[in-house]
Amino acid sequence: MDSGDVSLHPPVPPLPGPAAPSSAASPAAENPFGTPSRSRAPAQNLRKRIGSALAALGVLAAKFWAVIKGALIFLPKLKLLTTAGTALISVVVYSLFFGWTFAIGFVVLLFVHEMGHVIQLRREGVKASAPMFIPMLGAVVMMKSMPDDALAEARVGLAGPILGTAGSAVCLAIGEATDSDLLRALAYVGFLLNLINLVPLTPFDGGRAMAAMAPAMWFVGLGVMVALLLVTGNTFLLIFIVLGGMDVWRRWKLRRTRSIEQAAYYRVSSRNRLLVGAVYLGLIAVLVAGMEHAYVLSSGGHTFGRF
Image (cartoon, rainbow, N blue to C red):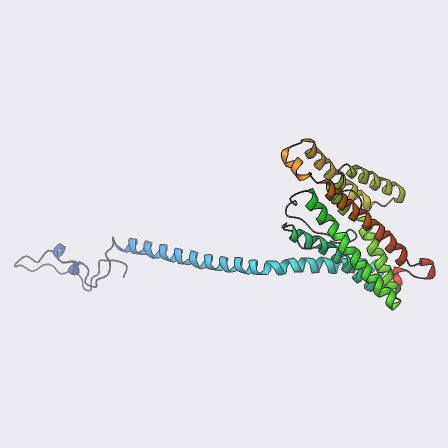
């Protein structure tokens, strides 16, 4: 019934007599069933198609928005899964060398250290990523932006070793109370980890402290890392030397521009420089003392693999 011309019988010749009324005067005679005419049907079909297409787009938009909302709700859980997933991988890798119990304790100490940075970054109003563990290289927290000035950067840098030192000290205290060589060994490695992080070279925590004290010390830190590479032959140090060298060169070039922004960033009062220096040197002294007290003689049969 798409056609507007409908006939139920064969055509009959007109009878003589008065002329029949014109079909133009009666639309019903042209289309007795009241269906749309041939000219109106395409327009109505077009409108129906457009309406169907718009309805389909609306459904797709609703589904897309539902997916976006679900992703936004799941985002905090995704960060947690990233931290937990990389921590689990690190535990598995470290366990191949040191055993499961030591590997778990070591990753916990890494987490405590990184949470010191996270807490201070939040206090400084800087957005940061969740801690992410990198097997054989430690862990990292990525800042979304730099702190307001070098003093704030120093606070963020030193917060990790401060909390990490406290965590290692608690580990040592429990180890002494329970006479556990495992906990003593974990405390020793924790102290050592935080001491290494005080090397005055970015991106180490000590390098961030030097931003407020004496940025020229970055070159001293770079020289120390090169010397350690030559003495120990540890190729892992190449990673830190390359990253540190690139970062020091970039930051030093910016300082040489003597722009107003750079001058404002590195403007730190003498009092605050002394405070940062006191915390920095005090941490080194505490960490060295802690390592000496927690040291477990390997000649006495104590090896990480036995724990």
